[in-house]
Length: 480
Image 1 (cartoon, helix red, strand yellow):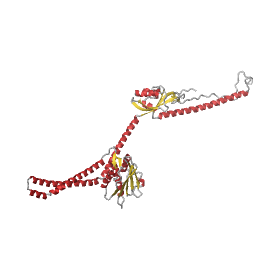
Image 2 (cartoon, rainbow, N blue to C red):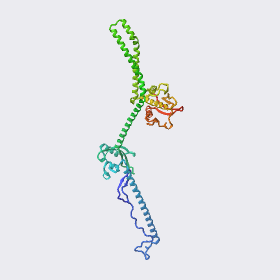
Image 3 (cartoon, rainbow, N blue to C red):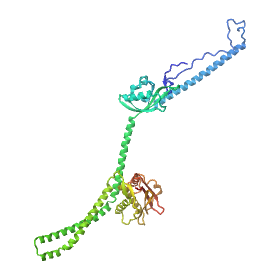
Image 4 (cartoon, helix red, strand yellow):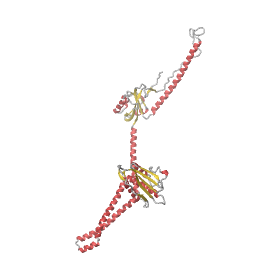
């Protein structure tokens, strides 16, 4: 049957009606039953000669069957027309809802179908685009060459191929589009065109740039938090450090004052020698000024002064190494030395009644940053001290031991405090989680320590020891 409706091309080469198609035609009047026609040469009784009434009844019955079948065909045709209209509306709604641009062209690159996203991007109507060459929408020759290669491919893959194209938008600006080109195959197996489905990548690139910027800002914030927590740990040791520096400095000052007095005595005696005093007078002055004792005491004074100055320099260098930002490079680190330094600094900032039980074991070398590992151990030691000190009636004690296990070293730190509440065991390494009072902790120490240990290829875990108190286990790979 004929139809005056327009058509749209599908990916398989068929067409889609653009408007509802009414294919039904008016039915002819239904013939009257039991009314045989009367011919001109009918006999006196109004019937044709040689044709009896039963024959006419058969003819009329056949006509009635044909008419009934015609009615059924008309009903079925109306149903098919309704389904076709619904399918057409569904396809149009899908094309309109697509956020990606869609363009369908024939084997010569002539545009046959577009969707609303493409029309909005290029700023042209459907009527203006239909029949236009796809190359007229491209912004540069490189994109045109890619399209020509796609259309000229005689054996395209059914999965399509990805190409990068630059389209001209409504303002004539170049818009990068990441397109997938899929061949349209007719029922005969012949390629009849290509379907281009693409997405403008400008927004994706902008979003990626914003994501990368946010990631860099997050990394900087993480480094700042790491440094801030390290400086907070350093701040807790100020009192102990001041006491530690006071000893060698006081020793040096005392030696310098003694050297100053000795210098005055030597100057007085040398002036008498240069003035030519009598030997008896010089002997008297030598005894009175205790020149012999002075000369015997000078080496020890100088040696003690140098020792005190060196001790002061070592303390300052240790603080500088701990407070400085660590480089990314990893070097061999003696774990026992790191533990000793951490115990030394923490013990200077806590009550002297705290007892630490640790005997250096077999020397173990790990690869990493000495400053970062020292920060981890200081955080664990400080937390253990705080937890044990909160338990009244018992002297705080901390046990530290190390053991080698194949290619790894295991360090355990256990205190005699109240332990960790079971509901907190799964959260103690979360950022900003703390059970300390406000102003006593930031909740970042264990979280940062956990991250540092992971960066060193190790693990950090916590549990409640069967004998009481909390136990933290630090495992690190050994350096061959």
